[in-house]
Length: 92
Image (cartoon, rainbow, N blue to C red; front, side, top):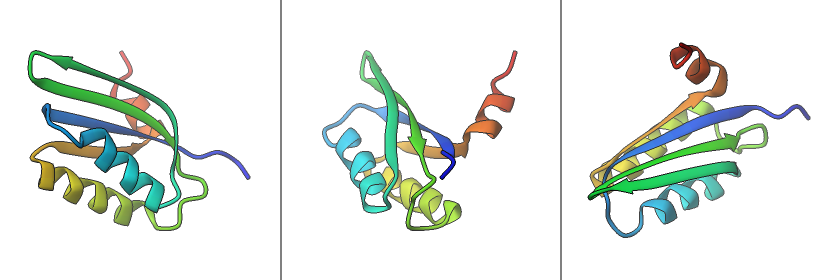
């Protein structure tokens, strides 16, 4: 099966449980984390994840809504985009 990738961005005030909440949501939907980077600047948390969605057990829009809802509960922003769209938006 061909790998289908997506990019997840997470931004907001740092707090306990951000990585756990996002990664649990992905695991529950059979989404594999391929690469992850995160940093904290003062108290601002930012994370970018590359994920493999080729074997997820839900549709893309449902996953996007679930991640957004998880972020809302934490008071942070969580967004997912197909890799091609992310690359097009961030091309210089």
